[in-house]
Image 1 (cartoon, rainbow, N blue to C red):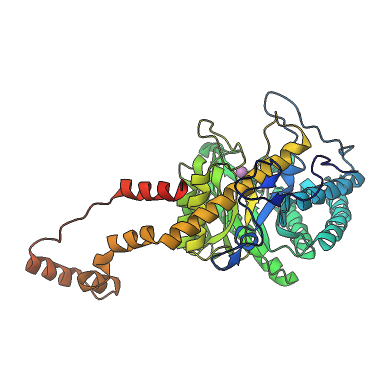
Image 2 (image 1 turned 60 degrees about the horizontal axis):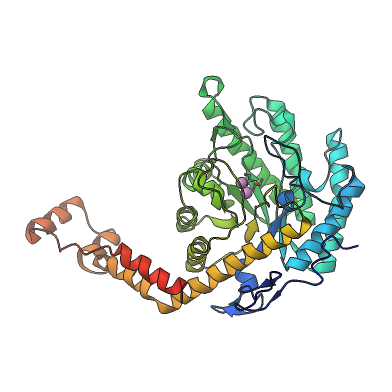
Length: 438
Ligand code: XLS
Ligand code: NI
Ligand code: NI
C-alpha cells in the first residue's frame, strides 16, 4: 500500500511553463550546469527526524500530523516507517538522507537494548539503500532528548552523562559506517548554558574538545572515512550554545586542534538566529576552508526560534549557490532539508509539496547563479574594486614585503592616496535583479 497515493510515480521535470504542482519546473536532475549535473551540484537530502518523526506539536498543543502508517513505538513499526521513507525519497527523487540514532529506532531500557533496536532498523535501511541506490549523507546521535542530558552531554556537569553520550556516539559512528554514510554531524544539542552562575565555562569547553577528539580517534580506529561536521547554532534549547556561529565554531576547532578533521554544517535558520545571513556564514566558513554541508531551511524573521521552514526564497538560494559554485561545490556534503511542514499542513502529500518546492527553489537559484557567473559582470566589478592590490604598493603588501617603515616612506613620498571609487552597491543589486527577472 502506498503512503503517498496521490503521487503515482516519481516527480518529473516538466520545465518552467508547467502548472503541474507535482512536477519540477527547474530541477532537472541530469541536466548539466557548469559541466556537472544538477543532481551532483545540489546533492539533496531529507531529514528523517522532520519528515518521518515531526508530529506537529508545539508548546501549546499536541501532535497534528496524519500519518496512517504510524503505530506503537516498536521496532517493527520503525522498520515499517523506513519503507515509507524510501517510498517518499523515490517519489521526490531525493538521493540522500540524514538521521539521528533515536529518530530511526526507539530508545530501549538500556544502552544494550537501544543498540539492538538500532541494528534491527539499520538492517532495513541498508536493504532499502541497496534496492534504491539512495545514500546516507550523514548520521548523528540525539544527545539532547533524554532527560539524562538535561545539563548537556559532552558539556554536562555530570561525568556519567559524558560517558553515556560517548557510548551513544560510538554506536552511531558504527552504524553510519555500516550504511556507507559520507559524513557524521555534531550538533551541540544542549551543549551550552542557561546561566553563568552555575557554569564552569572553561571546563565545559575543554570537555567538548575532548569529546570530539576521542570521536575522531574512534572513527580512525574503525576505519570510518566520512567527513565530520560541526553545526553552528547560537541559542535554543540553551540561552547560549557554545557552537554559536561559523566564526565561533572555527575558533573552537582550531583551539582544540580539530581543524583538520571537522568542517561545518551551516544551517540557514541558525545563521539568522545568530544575527547573520546564511550567505555570510557560508562565505565565512568557505573562505576559511571549513565548507562542509548545508542544512537547508529558512526561519521566520519575526519569530526568534528555529522554525525550520522549507526554503522558498529564490534570492536566498541564489546567493547560497553563488558561494557554493565559487568555492567548487560540495565534496562530501549536500543540501539537507532540515525542515518541517507546518503543523497545519498535516497530510502526507504536504511532505511532497514541501520538498519539491524546496528542491525547485534551489534548482532555480543554481540556474541563476550559473547565469550570473557566465555574464561575469559581478566578478569583474569585484575584481576591479580590489585592483589596487594587483600591482605597485598593494602587491608589495600582499606579498609580505612591506613594513611600517617602507609604507611610511611610500606615503611621505606620495603625499596622499589615490582617489576612492564608488562601491556601487545599488548597481550590484540592480544587476542581480536583471538576472533574477529575465
Ligand atoms: C537543530 C539542529 C539539528 C541538527 C542535527 O536545531 O538543526 O536538527 O541538524 O542534530
Ligand atoms: Ni540542522
Ligand atoms: Ni535547526
